[in-house]
Image (cartoon, rainbow, N blue to C red; front, side, top):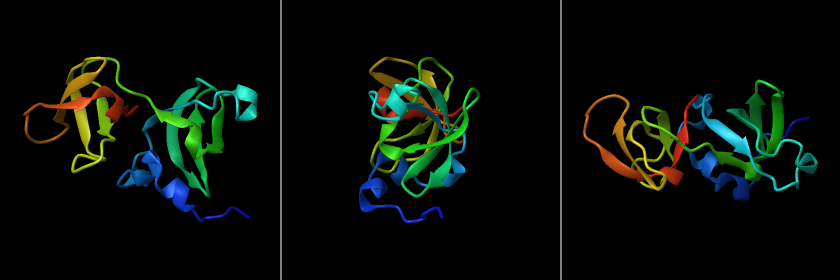
Length: 132
């Protein structure tokens, strides 16, 4: 039987705090276990978020299908170019909001809301996750 309980530690993880997490089925993730999960077989694999099962993230890639992985081994895929749609992962009022990268930088991107105002705002590149 699959446990539907999520531990307090898991609830404080960046992905678990994302508002409307289960509506974010196209959030791009990569596995980074440093060899601790499945002997590193999946390390570096990129895929998308498909849900939560207990303390595991349901991770989907075209080469592996859906696999449950420990929540703490997934990292967001950060933007690498202009015009990518992204979720903001930074704490605060922008957490979970969807933006488009208008100016890409390895440290900081200028983004605009996906819908609405065209005003640009700076957000650290590491605080953005690509939507695929």
